[in-house]
Length: 400
Image 1 (cartoon, one colour):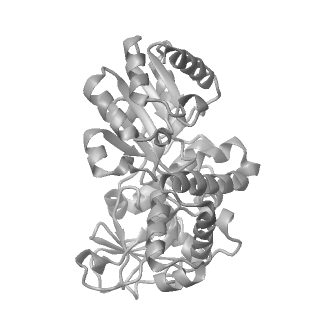
Image 2 (cartoon, rainbow, N blue to C red):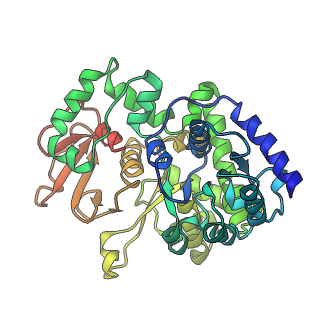
Image 3 (tube, rainbow, N blue to C red):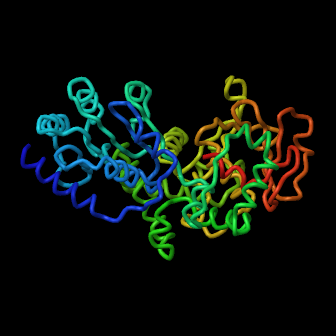
């Protein structure tokens, strides 16, 4: 084990010497200043979990005997007893360890729990959102944080080196005219142009590494999520992964409520019971967003579910034909779902936090469908500034 530890230190030095983006995402300060002994970061592939951990490790400015980074997908850690490794690191003076791809370790939850109970060691770890680190029993003991896709605000900050504030949903609903005007004044670019950039290529930080190869990289990310995250974690065979890819493509070219589960099962060649499992896997891997009718909260009605791709950039990698209305709804759902509960309703498109009803549309959208509802709003594309209950769609990209 000492030999493995020494090699792990060498690999950590190599990792720290690699170039890392200087931009720090909104979770950086929260994670860095957390007093928790064990901190978990989960999220979709490509959103920047590794970068976040390396940035925190560098800021600690400790020597390699006190703080290291390891990645469990490296051959060095194949079949390793993680707790024994952590125990050895702690006995040799280790204080901080950053563990990437922790889901590659079998029964990693038991090892982390033992480290929590017996070792004087601060642990940061990251893993795919598809794994059970999001299970309540695990997250109650440790501090778990979800790192979402880049918001429109973050994309603009990185792309144009402009500092911008985030705003809560309640602030936007109450003061959206003022907030929008302040944002527009601070920008040197037209906000609708920036919105178009974002929905096409602004969701994942790796866009900035090589813009010309973004779609190829995005396709690789989808395949890695399917074959390595879902395939390995849930023991889905490679031939069944093809069915998952077909399911994603079907969602891509369809409007959200065009397809019932029965139709999806027929198109994809998957039984209904298996299809429900696959929808759950794709949701956990953050490749789709699964939204149920608000009546299902009370199990009162049998209603179809709405299925969206997890973010608007995925359309470019999965299908050629894109429906503008679906792109709008996907943008809204992808950014609201990070910290708000979404259902869909008969009147309007979304019920948010069981309180606010939103209809999504273009600039000519009117209130005819939701005029009788309290707390109802239009989220409208192709406008810079709204009025009263009519809010620019792009502004929901400033929630975090």
